[in-house]
Amino acid sequence: MHGTKLDLRIWICAIFLVLTSSKGISSVVMARLLGVNQKTAWKMGHAIREMMDDRNGELLTLEDIVEVDEAYVGGAPKSLSGAYNPRGKGTGKPMIFVAASRDGQARARVVPDDKRATLEPILLEWIDPATTRLMTDGSTSYLNRPGFTGE
Image 1 (cartoon, rainbow, N blue to C red):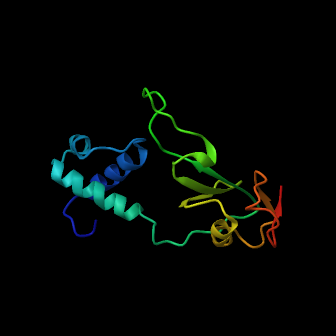
Image 2: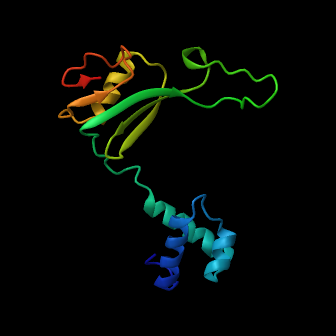
């Protein structure tokens, strides 16, 4: 933002548009609303998204009551004729491991399997050791963890 000749008010309006559009906003629409050309709106949109990027930031650990589970996602829609997607562990869909704290924080990662050796390092990375309750579906991959009381 500091290296552009655009007025700060245009940047603030652009940030507002990017943050409030539920499905994103195209550079063509942003250009029309801001009164700039499409290339400028495209660069502004990318600069705003780059500022919002927090991939290199440090994530806080999940605390208090944490719920963990795995899910299989993806595959062809069932509405297609002849599409058969078996459910659960017999499926060819990728497995997603999810942990969510009751305060709204969540983490998710694609994992190759649901074995304890795969999930335990992820759990120890994501969850605060002072966590007192780990809510699970009773899978043996989560049971009897040191420092966690499962339910």
